[in-house]
Amino acid sequence: MANHLAFALFKNGSLSVSSINRFARNIEAEITSNRKAGAYHHIALSVGEMAAFTRPGNFVAIKVGGENSNMVLRRAFAIYRSVDLGNGNGQIELVVAPHGQGSSWVAARAVGERLNIIGPLGTAFGIPTEPVRALLVGGGYGSAPLFGLSEVLKARGCRVDMVLGASTAMKIYAPLEGKRSVNALTITTDDGSAGIAGKVSDVVPDLIDSNAIDIVYSCGPMGMLEAITKISVEKGVLHQASVEESMACGIGVCMTCVLPVKGEDGVIRMLRSCIDGPVMNGEDVIWDSKRSIPEGTWGK
Amino acid sequence: MSSFDFTTSLGSAQFANPIFTASGCAGSGKELSQFFPLENLGAVVTKSIMLKPRSGRATPRMAETPSGMLNSIGLQGPGIDIFLENDIPWLVSQGATTVVSIAGESVEDYAILARRLRAVPGISALEVNISCPNVENRGQVFACDPVTARAAVESVRRNIGGELPIIAKLSPDVTDIAHIAAEVVSAGADGVALINTVLGMVIDTNTLRPKLAGKTGGLSGPAIRPVAVRAIYQVRSRLPHVSILGMGGVASGRDALELILAGANAVSVGTANFGNPLATMMVKSELEQLLQDKGFNSLREASGYAHRPEGNYDH
Image (cartoon, rainbow over all chains, first blue to last red; front, side):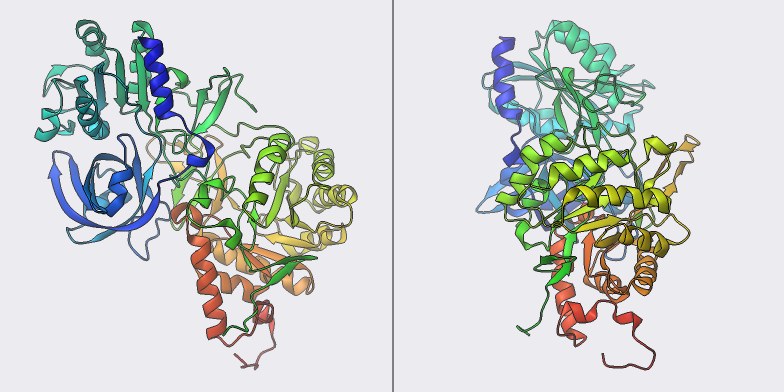
């Protein structure tokens, strides 16, 4: 089962040179909705045909600060959901955490304003070709791309369980329509203000066992992804993680968002999380909280 | 309008227009080619290629700064073998005019790289990036010392043969950039690329440590444009006939015109590509329009125009 699955995932998630930024377009997208959801903003954009080419796991890069801004770099946002309305019309939805100057600017935009966006960018979650039992694990607003993924998995007949964790209840992003797309949702918070007190990694091992999980999908802070990788390796289940590295361009030209990843040939290379990610096979990533270049890396 | 001449040259190399990518700011070319045909550029300047594959530095490699950014990539790249096997044939297949940038850790590295490139078809010019630490001289950057800057360029000149123009890329982190330029030109460079990034540092006030893993990084973007304009102006004054590839914070046709008026013959667009993959095409069309609006009949006529004597109001 596992080997067969791996093949299907590889076909979906693999990347050939000709596919770099293949569907990416630079457009002015009108904001059709912007509402506050806990600590976050849920923003919907009218993006035309871009929605039809968007897959769960893809992201967009948004120009911030307006015409005479002193912020020269785009900000990357995971796509929460894309809706293809047909006839070249479509919408994408984002979950924005107003942490810094750039994301705060995006969160403050009004309905009717236009955002300069490039998308869809990056790799997508691999979708199994047969109905499997999937566990989706999200940290903070890292839950954003998991709801769209859940819809796709459900449409393929998969059973979908979800675990969302955050420091506190306000930082759990789980909208009602999102909850409907999963079979069972478990919530953890560090302060115990919602769900189980603790971290997602405290509950994931039991969920994998009790629900006979075949594959884990995760998105959130790097420390969480490392912990989930460790668990999935121990349990012998496949794991695809959407990584979070700060990016300057999002389109593969700046070489700032790299992380060490072991290839099929066993060689570790510094790969770009915008082009070779953000979705990667968890066990291929050399998770390293010290963020050094691991020994044996190609070209070290 | 149609008689406007947008062509330019660096040494003996001719280019259809003066807008290039800046080294290290266009990936392998493939990434940007999804947004516009690379053949529309004056030239693609490749990332600086070294003898061996390089992993580059650890992360964080980047920090955004007011109107700019700091980077410390550490010349991550595949090395000359894979570069010649993959990157060059691909660029040629796209019809891209190509300037290859090379970087070495020793004078001998530059010699070997020049020999590897001398017979490769499809290359218009060589950019010699000498803003690298010289392992034979306590890690001192070649470009910051007239003697080592000269040695690196001489090494390329001796090994490249007579055909390919050599453009030496200089660092602004020196006392007298015109002096360094004069030295590399006398060592055989046909032109100079001005300017590489300006050395800087950002300290994270949360962790209370330098933000980049490499501690220092290269500052780029509009924040450094006046430094580029100054350097180009000074070198053009000292060396009226040397080719200058200008770069530093160019994000519009107006910015490119500023560098050209200071003395640049062509202009590379770098950091602006990160925020706008179509930046080069925008700069190109804006510049072409702007030059004509100012009454110039050619790009060549505008190059160095800011140096004309007082009291000349032709344009």
